[in-house]
Length: 181
Image (tube, rainbow, N blue to C red):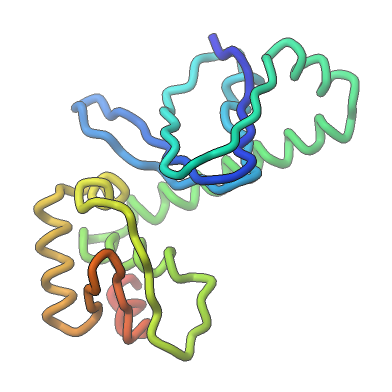
């Protein structure tokens, strides 16, 4: 039974799920000011999602009964929760849609890399500093570590990316978008 909701005030957390075959699937990386466990608290059912902090985080906890009393009494809080649940459902649908409709692991990896730079200006080389291992990237795209290592090497050989330590440099966003499409 869910005990309460957690608010990630600062830092980032990894949301993952254990598949029936034992594989771990990373659903997404959550940023600050995000509510964790809301759907489980509202539905009263255990969550299958595991949250692991990946940065130093400041997290606040609100116990379930107090939280439910708050949303019963405060219409604005209830509406904010409904909006958060709707955003969560939409984002989850979009993520699953992208993952299932991608025809290849190459396309999935290209989409992931592009998602990491989506807010960057389009007129320069794009740098992505990643603290994720090849195994974690594989868990994000539903692939194997070996496949991610091979695909990154192929992308490097084709000059789609350059690796500078833990930084991935994307010199040609358009070429990567063509692979992702």
